[in-house]
Image (cartoon, rainbow, N blue to C red; front, side, top):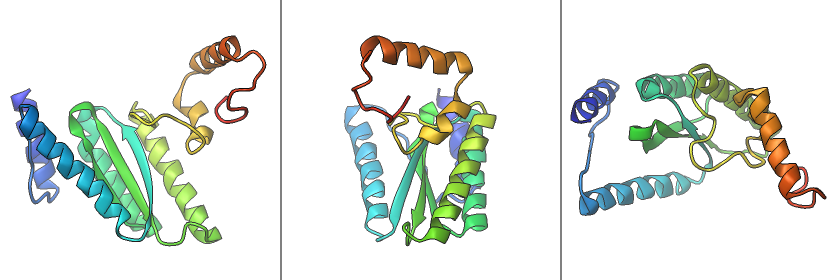
Length: 172
């Protein structure tokens, strides 16, 4: 664990991180969580719309993901901010949009998300690490799971909701 933490810290610093913090123990961990919560709030305070994507990649791909996010920023013209819980590979890739209701901006947002989720899937990651699929990621779900997994979800949905009255059309 310690050697992985040191290696990850070195990789992140090589990308230009100003600081790399780690914590052990309840008090120290809570201080880091407070910093993480504050970072998310600071993104909201920019006045931009924050498209928070909680993707998960194998830990060996975290640096690749940050580099990929930088490329998305360059190609699509949106600021992109990444943070997360590196220990489990869950990184929040936040695409920051000034005018999300603009048709051209929506097209660029969709294209950026197509590329992000496509790359995460190619790396054998998950398009969600903790917040679920919901409506926002519904269109990418079939590409993210096997046909067998899709069928299993439908079987469970049908067993629990045979009349189709729970969240109709929202997920399956």
